[in-house]
Length: 321
Image (cartoon, rainbow, N blue to C red; front, side):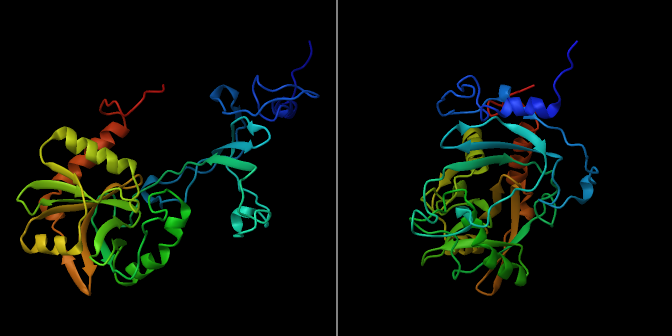
């Protein structure tokens, strides 16, 4: 009986069609561009060296990664290749790769790419903030720094929005705060908290109980968690839910009138993060989030976690196995 081909031969045969499925032809033929990739074409190469399982109580965000990663290559000539789960490894880039440089001549850098790599890595994490899972954070608000502006990319999930914010983040930490409260415009509109969307739960100017978050006007990231909170609150129907502008004057006036109940950020990593203090114009402004429970922030966090972990049925989730 003939022996089966070795793994290297198998992979070579699998890759001979540039990762294509039935659309491809064999040697000597021609083929069209593959428009998508499919799970049935997945190649799996298990690692031979397993990492030591980390202590879940000492995980630092973004420092521990799983044993494997997923990669899918794309080219303008062949389209998508076969998805490949392989051992976690470094990526290799040529020093002249256009992604590392800026140029105005199409022949040098700024041009439509002909190759791309989609990759997925996984990282078990502990609390996003060093203060803990649901401990409040303090914010540093200063109008000299702006996270985003009209006509820019503030409403897009891209690295440039985060890299440019690091200097302000360092200054926030130098001032004893954990995050930046981003302001915008001459009236100091409240926009976002660090890399999170922002919510204020208060009694508004008309005496109404209201949950409010800044509107999607081009400088606010349309976060999934943000939208989930809005959808939940609207479904509950227990208080007014608004997307509208807020300024620092609105906030300080409400605090003076004891109308502020809770302030919290929302995002994929932290889900919900309460705010306790804001350093603004040299003065620390206390936000009574924790004194008020925080009933709403805790309720939202519990609800979203229950949905995410399958403890509660929801049309937001799909059972895959």
